Image (cartoon, rainbow, N blue to C red):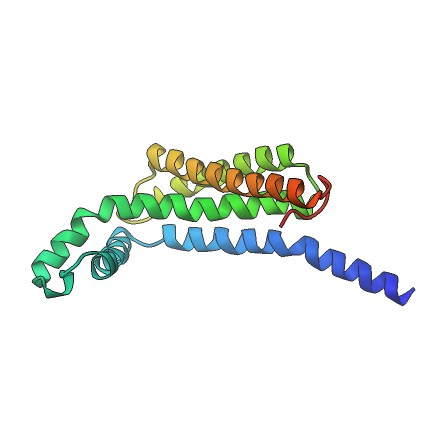
Length: 175
């Protein structure tokens, strides 16, 4: 009897793992989207400077003005890459929630994770309409949705590979 309780408790904890991660990641996205435009720009410029330091030979020897100009020139791609990356992570977490917490098959996990991630992207852009200096953009929803799609494709492909390699059933954990 005691062993059954322990097993049920462990199963319950495992089922909660990915939904908790999803909620924490959604909170992180919400907080990043809540930054006023000036703060958001400062953050992406710091990322641009870090990229310059890591990938551009001689960057450190450039003048401050040249370093700032470089960071400003790559600001747009940095922001869009950040959108795609944060939503790729969300897609992975949503897919795993559908799969591991709700026991959905690959097709249902893919569909539901993609729809939930895209809906969250749309609400996130709507939220930005109320943040000083920010704007909700349909193009960002599309980039975010592509990120979710990529995350779902990544996990789905990994699950299929592991199932073939290990002969794991469609209901079993795929990672």
